Image (cartoon, rainbow, N blue to C red; front, side, top):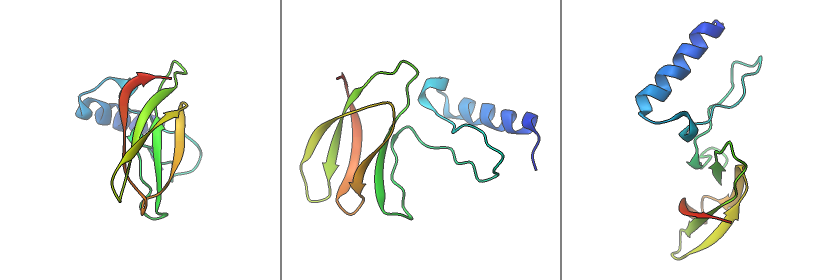
Amino acid sequence: MRSNWARAAAVACAVVAMGSAATTAYAAPETASVSTKLQACGWDPDGPSGRAYYNHCTSDGSWIYIRVEFQQGGGTPLCVAPGRTYLGLTADIKYAWYTGGLC
């Protein structure tokens, strides 16, 4: 099992490698489990389950508008809260992205 120092170093290297501020990446809280998963901010499809999510990473509690694009064409705006929002099945949802507005 990795030490806390090694985990912290790995996370720090990942953030530096991404070349971005810590606000654009969210690491799930550490638990005793080795299977703790880092969840992406923004469009976050879960391939094995076939479910589509949007993960709004924020520290200010803001709600934002995203646009959800459908596999069959077209799309719709949606207001999402902080955290991970279920959008539907990846068979129906092609992509989702932040439009730049608060709601």
